[in-house]
Image 1 (tube, one colour):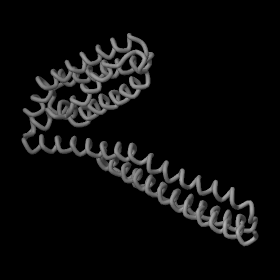
Image 2 (tube, one colour):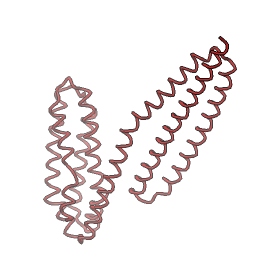
Image 3 (spheres, helix red, strand yellow):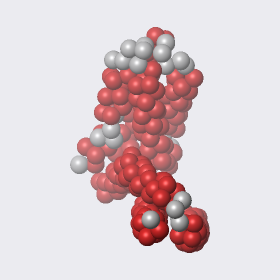
Amino acid sequence: MPSKHFSQTPPDKANDLFDKILATSDSATKTRERLFADLKDELELLASLQEQHLFPILQKHGMQELLSASISDNQETALLLGELERMQKSSSEFLGKVAELRKAFQQHIRDDRKQLLPAVLEVLSDEEAQAVADQVEDELANLNDLKHVETSAPADIGAAVQRSLDGVDEVVRLGADSTRTMTVGVQDLSQECLSMSQKRLQTNLDGWTKLAQCRSLQDLTKTQVSLMQENLELTLHNSFRLADLAVKLAERATWHGAIRR
């Protein structure tokens, strides 16, 4: 069971990204940039998981030769990623360098499966191996949650903010017929914005205090996800609140305009 878990520390996503990049044309610059950014994140994640969870085991059990080889592999990957990041994504040379990186990466994976993972499993009990595998899975799950928050939230926030802006535009257009209504309404909006800013400041201060108290990478990741979610929820709440105030102010301006006519 542990061997199966370790072997699934996934190269599949990276290989899929390699295939997609190599299938692009030189004119697909934006697509290449996006795919390469995803590939870089994935390869750096795999290297980080290896360094955090497997390298200490090699060090502890005196497997220096295997440790040095694995460190060298990760350094080679980092070097090639740096070269690719500096290259023009529209050049044919870029694809050649991607192919070189893929070859090196796939060789590293073969070496890990034949040498590194068996060596690690040999010195660990089933329970210890399972514990390491569970830690890796938890970190991957937390990172996926973080990515989900980052990718799904902007559309909701954008819509809410746009509704707020639309409401403010309506206030400006209709409020010209009622200076007093505008004055009172703008004061309400200003007070509400001040209150929101104070609440956001306190939320972030509390969040940074929690981050400073973290004692493990897993706790740090969970706290970061929680802080991001709190900020996103607060942003959405504030946007809806501003939109509601703006609509009510627009209604009052319209009503006063109708009375005056």
